Image 1 (cartoon, rainbow, N blue to C red):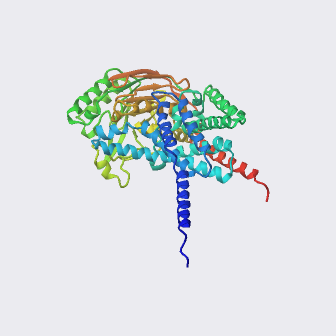
Image 2: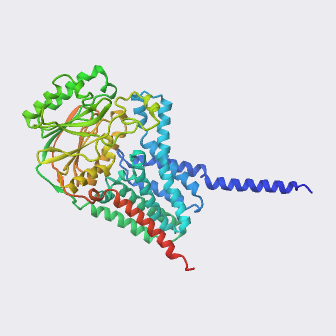
Image 3: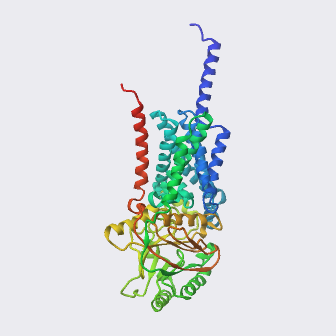
Amino acid sequence: MKPPSPDLDIGGASGAAASLHAATARAWPGAVPALLALLSGASNVFAFAPFGLWPLQILALAWLMHAVLSTPRDHGKRHFLLGWLYGFGWSAAGVHWLYISMHDYGGMASWMAALAVGLLAAYVGLYAGLAMLLGSWLRRRWSSSAAISVLMILPALWALTEWARGWIFTGFPWLISGYAHNVGPLSGFAPLLGVYGLGWVSAMLAGCLALLWLARRQRQSVLTPALLLVALLAGGLLLRTVAWTQPSGKPISVRLLQGNVPQEMKFSNEALLSTLNMYQQMITETPADLIATPETAVPLLPQQLPPEYLARLAAFVRNSGSHLALGIPMSDGPGMYANSVLGIDAATSSTNQPYRYDKHHLVPFGEFIPPGFRWFVDMMNIPLGDMTRGSAVQMPFGVKDQWVLPNICYEDLFGEEIAGHLRAAYSAGQPQASILLNLSNIAWFGNSIALPQHLQISQMRTLETGRPMLRATNTGATAVILPHNGGLQELPPFTRGVLSASVQGYGGQTPYILLGNKLVVGLALLMLLLAWGRNKAARPAA
């Protein structure tokens, strides 16, 4: 048999190499698009507090959608990687302050703390990558037009993946795109659709901009995306004029305490006595209808406190007619510890136990240890690292004419759960909270953008529920957030002080209270169904 021609071998090898190169080019974006995706994602941090440049979130996402739209439909891997790089840059820039808690206060080696932040950002980036991958795949499978892709398919997938990020592995919805829009025209959608709905609407606006960009380059009509963009912005502005809730009962006087205890001293034996004395003095200084301390302001279990400490606070409350919401850990048995709010009022006695709220949504690695990660937590010197979980629905704390519903630190990221408390009370005919109260200690993150970001999260809960949110924090942001007009009173961060205010409670139901995230999830699925239906209707009959 004649041996193969060397020319044929070389040609075959060249063809294989060319095919491999073409496949690699389809899978991997070039250096410039990859860098742009990373920088575009990282720029999102400026859309959120404390910067507040909310249009930047829409513009950055519009760039990503245009990058997907302007490349062939069969480049799914490339689209995934662009989305992943975008999400990685967004998360790494937005939550870089986690390094402070792990390294500065947790004692973790710098390289390992940086790696942990990078791994978290890599995980969060998967959701943006998945949205782009599925959008590319559905566009190809359904033979969808560019308009259907960026106005229906991609916004729906963006909303669904952000919603999934809020509950998978207990959820990490920090810097979900909707939070950038607690101010601006889109805030009117919050009582209707919640934070994930704002993300969906912002993704449709981004799709409009991407389509306008593409249509201008291809000299096509820009009427549809332009009209939709104006309609969405106008709709948000009109919704801002709707008062979903109304004042209820008489206003109450509140005092929110900010102790400004350095995190490195909070649990040290040397500082415990001075911390206890400081909070006792701040609490008993002046009466108020509601006095609230930060999360774990008292960092000891009741049985570990000096004799008569709680009794002295209870005596002040009874004599002054005040109500005290005290952040303190509680124990119901050996090895059982809860991050709690103890509500003490004039009725509290040896036979009538204080009101108690136990934190339900615990922080992974800080308050509970995910299976298989004990070694990771053991590397950090964080006390109270494994805690018990409170009930999903708990009663509010009665304060004169108002009902105050606490949530602790990280819990106010989960608007569906806070709305769930209100919805359950409404359905059962029980007292429904008229005021929300967040007790936090985010001194773990130092003097970083975590503080204004967390305040922005609380502002979103106020928009969703139509109720004021009170925040009592260790280092900031201690604040009173009012519904409807978005009024804000705030103490300067990293100062010791008391924020005093008169606060009006609100009653009534927003659509988000009644439906939670079901509405936006249903609408997103409906958009996908309609996109599929348009494709099916456009096919010629067999």
